[in-house]
Image (cartoon, rainbow, N blue to C red; front, side, top):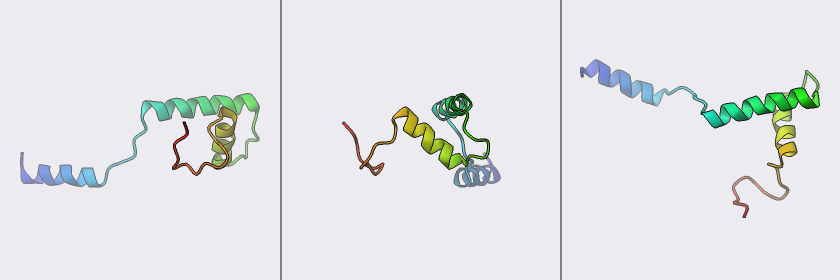
Length: 71
């Protein structure tokens, strides 16, 4: 492997792009189906849609800051 290829590979590791896994894609598709089902207003902000979907699924719990484990 030439030095140019090694440098190119290392630069690509540092400047890596965003990639979504299967779970993220499945949740995104399920959330879109949910939005269509509950008929949220078309001008809803993405953050509001995500919050409403998480609340409907039971993923949001009071007095939990996201860093705690719930048993």
